[in-house]
Image (cartoon, rainbow, N blue to C red; front, top):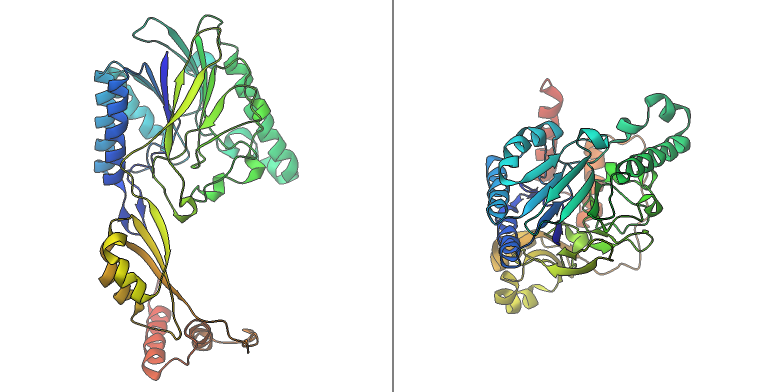
Length: 388
């Protein structure tokens, strides 16, 4: 059986004011080409289909168009909800997605109530898929347990997750391809930096040893950095996100996982790079260097630019963006280190105007001019006087 594992699309993501959907559509087009060309039997999408619980119509259209395409190609698909997905919404469109052989699971369920799905693929082989969508701490740990002992509550969460895994894995069969899908955080997984931190803390992680040794493959979602889980008793991988989602992912090669599985044999696994996403690049150059390299840099991806200066240049942002165009995401500068470092000034007792002046001096290394202070005070007055 030929299986593809993908995850964390975050369709509809607006990042620093940039719509990443056109990139994702290009990536999904390439993934669809691979699925059709290689006659993939089964596609596993391990959560965070969308970036928000209320995705745009354009994001939904892109996702549904992809699922329809792979369904028409004869590929079965299993999708679970991630922490960014709306479970009720996924359940609603999942009822129609079944028409193109897409099975969805929005909430953790017992094996006999949807927690385990079985597919018969075009070759006649059987895939048994145990699925665990994202489970909030409040789904598994009571408020009383959390209030009484924080550490014990975290242990309780891990124990409950292990119990779910053990329960679902009882449906695995020797003559089938046995798969586990989960949108969760395993301890010691390497973070990319773009994950939603409220759901990522180590305290809500589960151990790799909780995964079933009887699985041919474990398809993980939630962590954006592609990686295997070496401590797992069965082959387990985070597919990662198809796009570099923030500057913590600079230099990462994004890829999907290809699994070739047979009953009674270890799975063979490889990674295939996605194509179509723009790279995120961090640039440190002087203005003169940026001018010389402008043609090359404009086409190199999304840029975070840092410019060494001898003195502050309040027009720097405009100059850089004029040179490099819309590829620029952010502009910053660095000044030479001063030998006579300014001593820390206490902020105790300072009013808003004094605090603003202190902030301005620290960041601009000059006193704020009278028009700047006047503008700040005018805005402060409006904020104070305007009722909520």
